[in-house]
Length: 102
Image (tube, rainbow, N blue to C red; front, side, top):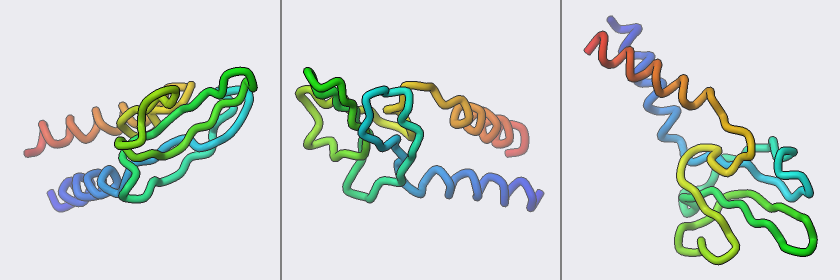
């Protein structure tokens, strides 16, 4: 039973460590594979496409500065062109453990 408690604690702490976003400046949005843990003041991920230059910039942003041409989203790695299934799997596993053993 202590093992399950340790696993639940680990999963909880890993999700509470802060927002993670894709960061890059590139011509191809699918080439953005670098990630960054955002500081506390940044609570959104953003994507910004510069018209006329075919450049995409991605990173961390504050919700107060979101708007206009900047597309902001909530959640880890939500500004990627490729969906990240590992976050969904981790959420489902932790939910199953909590449901079965608590």
